[in-house]
Length: 373
Ligand code: MUC
Ligand code: MG
Image (cartoon, rainbow, N blue to C red; front, side, top):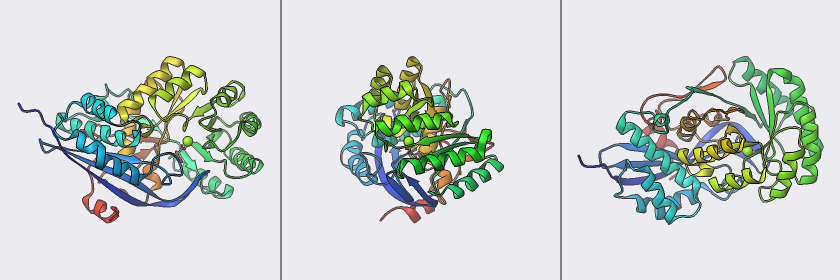
């Protein structure tokens, strides 16, 4: 039997509309841009992957245009002719060839897993060792920028049983204003919901010391990335004194970052993101570091569409414990997507298909409608 090889990789930038502006400390999203990867193999199987970031270059070091250019010029040519089923060898080739570029590598690793799953008739979660759950609890981010509108949104989502975990995006406004906003929402929702905040690195340590105390004392369950990723000492000190647990997000740009954060004691929760680690298999290495260090896990997102969301979900299904749930709500922020099967959200959970690969097929009409020319 001849072994299938990798024949061709094609990348597309897709701009999709959102249900409302999504306001983060560093950027307000008016739409979401996905990099979609199609990886074609010699046996006719196609694997799909996604690399998505937030706000061009506002969130981190990678932009959709940069990801696409690096795949097209450097990563794709290195994969042509390699065995499509040997994901270890393909990813080793990429790691040898390119430093970083975890978003691009994540899209490629996802596409290889999707193709192999379709080839063998197995869901990606099974290729990753098997799922220990079929669904994942999903948080929602309240980020309209308006307290009353956020409360109304949360009440509606509780009512229809879609979310009961809420993350608030803060950091851009003066500290006291942000604290009033968060406490007003927590007061309204009370014990009916878990309320967390994400500061996206916007405080300095002096602000974070007081804010974490106030938030923890007022029932806020989790504080995500309060200070800059480069201030490791500050993160260690905050992790020791904050009454609310500290979660690392931007601090983790690689599996190696996860190791050094764990070794320093800089967070008690890790946000797991396939894009920041280099794919669904890579993110599980970060999860293993956390498990060994006694650090709790949360399934994070870069607000991917259905492809990246299900790639993350298949990985998270295999974890022993996800103490803080997930935030795999990206598809719900979009009014359009480019797959035929809309992800299923019901009873506060994302229900993950057990069909071959990711369980998704591209909608060609939607793809050509939204692909950037
Ligand atoms: C982030 O920093 O966590 C995840 C959810 C959301 O609303 O923004 C993202 C990015
Ligand atoms: Mg975050």
